[in-house]
Amino acid sequence: MPQFDYPCPDCRATNSLHDAGCEFEGTPWPDVEKAYTDVIAELSAGPVAETALYDAVDGEWGALHRAALDRLTRDERVTKRNEVLRLRTAAEFREQVSEPTREPMRTIYTNGSVPGCHDNAVFAMVAWYEMVGLSWSETKANVVEWLEESGAWARGGFEESSPEALVESKRHVYESGYGWKEKAEAAKRVIDRHRG
Image (cartoon, rainbow, N blue to C red):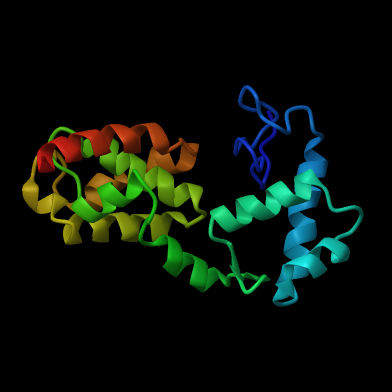
């Protein structure tokens, strides 16, 4: 089954198998990708007033364009200030996503893993950084730094000899593009009980 560069703006699928109830199920994939590229092409030239973007895209601005813009904004690739949209640079984006700010990832990032959820927490961190588009080397560096700075590694309970070896053992998660949400929610429940 072919994989696509841009996720469905509703269910985030990157192939033709959309989630049940997805607003764009059945939409031809070239139309999905065109909506993204229309928005990105305009924003790559520089900041644009949101209303001007509607007129500037190739073809008619519709629900698919709106959803693509919303997805890019939620994923923190596009910023909006005073009704002006701007595409983040690659460096700005990497900096922005290095510290997760949304739950359940924020709890995992802030508190670190605890015994009983190490596998889920590390899995979630690797999968999340892959989802936001970091390279494997960036993902590995971020997860190793998180293990050390959050105190998770010092709490122990890992079979691997180093944080680097632990993260390397999760490379398959990155390469397979597994989702992060289920593992993150399971890890957060254990961390919350541990804190409570």
